Image 1 (cartoon, rainbow, N blue to C red):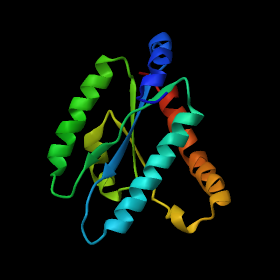
Image 2 (cartoon, rainbow, N blue to C red; image 1 turned 90 degrees about the vertical axis):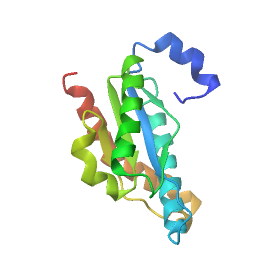
Image 3 (cartoon, rainbow, N blue to C red; image 1 turned 30 degrees about the horizontal axis):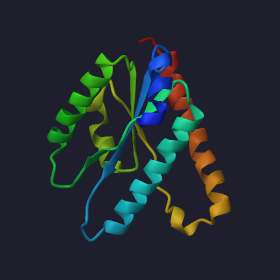
Image 4 (cartoon, rainbow, N blue to C red; image 1 turned 30 degrees about the vertical axis):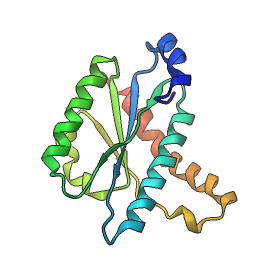
Length: 155
């Protein structure tokens, strides 16, 4: 399910089974490195949509958590704590943060109990359309055990 009107009724009927929130972390920056920032955002968005498709019925894909370079790590963590509280109060036992920004890796321990999934971005613009699905499927094969392992842990 996605955070959109057409999925609302389905979510309300099956909210007891939807226990995992997927929150893409995307950097918004118009600096000199704009192209790689946009590529990473595009990749993270497409991969999060694929995660939602693969785990439909168990997860809800939320709108991206966006940030920029001027925001401190502490400010980002504080905003994520608000999301964590809100999502936890709504019944989400697992909150998966998906990102292609390696800077989040250094803060991974401070994000717990949120689950950070870092996947280096791939410049999809250079991959033929017919091969993109294979690339995304390969990425999902890396993520699948992380998510199912999370579910197998005790709450």
